[in-house]
Length: 430
Image (cartoon, rainbow, N blue to C red; front, side, top):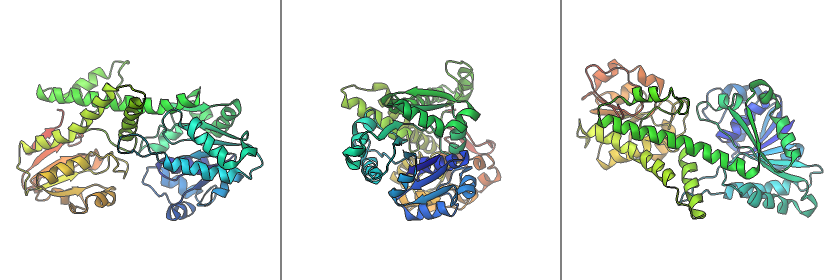
């Protein structure tokens, strides 16, 4: 099948590579000429385990990239994988996907066969049918009104495991208006449905839009709840991880997302939770639990610094920040808990040195005035304290490096440090 994908970010690039691996012919469309060039030369434009190998195998062959929307006319279906960032009030900014819908409609105006446009972007219920569908058809012209259909196919990819998540999903959701759209999406995903046998959810467009938000809001709330319980455990001298291990044995709770720590981040949880709060207020509903979910998450970095300040005066002292990506396995710093941690250290006039194995370049754009080390050992050398913000495996191997600290004070926000002897060690919830 011939597939086009608009947008080459984390989602667009991942699904493009995986669709090519299914045997489909894939064309990605992006305004960034550098990204287009990288894909055509078989290089992944983002850091994601397993992705480089797929793009190396198919880039420039079964997977092509272009800046020209005209390419959609030679495909059967187009996936829109464009960002919907947050506005100041938390609501989503749909300007990019709306502009793309207009351009896509214009490109499809001269196509002489039906076309399905599938939204992968995360949008509030009603956006696909009430906003994008009219834009597509108005741009295409009246004569094509019955030939452009729309559907919603939300993604559930976690950065750091996106390729595996796509290839072996728990569920695949088709939000469609017509039987023909469902049939076409089934054909696109047939290799995955046959091999992995995920649950297939065939539902309406609005329901599919809401499923994505509900999924992320539930997980964010679960993390904030275990963090709240972890904070309470800390006050009572109780190991929150032993508590979590026990309650995770209950099938009604489950063991996933029970690692308490410095909080959640990324491109999805913060944006989607705030968007759902804003959407609720638009319909005059006060989402108290979602607001509490965000409130708990925002105070975790402050607790990290408060624990550090129990042992060391951070003013004018060298403090190492270990981990800048919002999670291990990715170079993405969106929503990273390192950001508020660094900001609070700056407010206390700390001399900050930061290290991350892959995300340093991105964080330098946000905090150009702090020091960056080339290794964890270099960051710890001479430091009066250290905070662990990202759960990179290499941090668990740190041992003699702590002996090079001026004051061996380590506050762990992710429970990854294994050495406890001869250092002052604090866990944020244990």
